[in-house]
Each structure stands twice: as C-alpha cells, then as structure tokens.
Length: 311
Ligand SMILES: C[S@@+](CC[C@H](N)C(=O)[O-])C[C@H]1O[C@@H](n2cnc3c(N)ncnc32)[C@H](O)[C@@H]1O
Image (cartoon, rainbow, N blue to C red; front, side, top):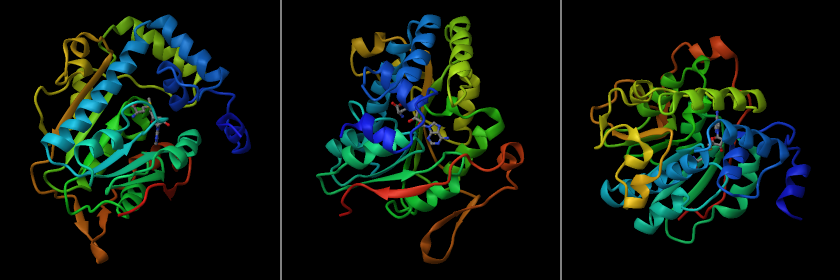
C-alpha cells in the first residue's frame, strides 16, 4: 500500500490545500494532491521566487540546526511545524554533529504524522519523538515533549516557516512567549517566517491567492514584526535577516533569494513566568487565554507518538 492509499484510509482531506503538502510540492516532493498543487501554482504565478525561497529556508534550517548542535552545544531540540520529511531534517543534521541529541518533532498535519511513524527513526544514541499537536496549544506541547526532553536543561525551540500560518487572532507573540517561558536560560529560539516587506506587492498577491485556496491562512510579517518574536532574547549575529543571509555556508547559499526573515535568539535571564511542579515537570503559567477568547479551542486535540528508540 503506498502512502496515497494510506492517506485515503486515514480520512485525510485532500479537497483543500494544506501547508505541509503545498510546501512538499514546492520542494519537489510527491506527498501532495491536486488541491495542494493548484494552491502552490497560484502562489508561483504571483511570486515566481517561491520555490527558491522555500529552498533557502530549508538551507537556513540546516545551518541553524548545525550551529545549535555543533557551536552552541545544544542537545535538546523541539521542532514545531516539522513538515513532511525532506532533505536535511533536523534530527539528521543535529545527530550528525551530536549523536546523543534528543529531538521532539511537533506537527498537527495527519500526512506528516503518517510519515513520521515510518521515517523519523534514530540509529544513534539520541532519541527522536513525534508529538501530534497544535502550536496554538503550547501547554500540551511542553507537557508531551517533557517525556523526552529535560526542561531543566537548555532546549532549542525551532519554529521554522510556521509562524506565518498563525494569524493575529491566535496570539502568535503570546504563543512564542509561552514556549520561551517554558525553557531555561541558555535555551534558544530559532524562527523564520514569510516576509511582507520583501517583494511586497508580489507577496501580498501570493497571500491573497493562497488564502483563497488553503486550509491554513497566511499572515506575512515585516522585519519589525518578526523581530518582535525575539523580544527579551539575545539575538545571535547577524540578527534577523533574510534567511539566505544568516551565516551562509557558501557563495551559492548567500546568493539564493528568499522572501523570508529568520533569526536565532538566546535566552539570557532567569525566567519569571514559569515554575516547576511535582516531579520536576515544567508548567506553563496560563494567562486568561486571549487565544481562546478570540478563537475558541484549538482545532484538533493532540496525541503523542513515539517513533524513535529512547536510549
Ligand atoms: C511550511 S511547513 C514548514 C516545514 C519545515 N519546518 C520547514 O521549514 O521546512 C509548515 C508546517 O507547519 C505545520 N503547521 C501549521 N500550523 C500548525 C499548527 N497550528 N500546529 C502545528 N503545526 C502546524 C504544517 O502542518 C506544516 O507541516
């Protein structure tokens, strides 16, 4: 049975485009359906640079993961918005540098879940686990991730090419702040998202077309809006830049154009907004939920699945 048949049997909605599958289409993958390709093509027609842009973002992901594992000494990774596996997945990059690294992937897309079970396996001493959860429910993410990650030690929270899928009504800054509050000093936030102020007219038209055809709506952001995600963190040089300009490893990488801002920040000060409960598990202090007032409950309930061998 190929994965398309599995998708049918899993009741995956193929009638409307989903970001994971559209992204897969742009990256040249096969895990997409007609609706995804139509949305992908509509964006290409508005902004022909999109394919180069998503590739530049994947290269950014790999450089950031390598930096965190090899230079910053991070051994725990929480990668939210995993996507359908492609080249240079986070666990491959970080475990090449640090075989004992532990990686927790989080996504809410059923196709990603289908792939995670078969592809995300670890043959080194570290661990890879997958949590089927919604970024708009960070409490569940942290609780499930704590089965694999030790939240008293630094964690790299990776939000790569996901925040443009979180609209303002879902309180994107509050969500990132809750995740930052759940990790200790010395932890990192790595984040990239689609820009509204690079090729602004083309990007605005791309968003309009995508939003007409897709399940998740896009909210592109300016450099200042993306920088705000790092408030309270110490930005790692060169700061928030177009993703191809974040420590490019070659002239080719530096010249790849994108319409995405990205950066890495380090948590310096002792957190004020989190505490430890019984058993040492981290708890998030929940504000009276602006998100739930605005949008109601998250769209899907979450569950976790272990796909790698724990050491
Ligand atoms: C554009 S892809 C990025 C994949 C990968 N991080 C990369 O940069 O190549 C966005 C991913 O985020 C996931 N996603 C979008 N909204 C989400 C949410 N609210 N909670 C969890 N995952 C979400 C999608 O399912 C998709 O797999």
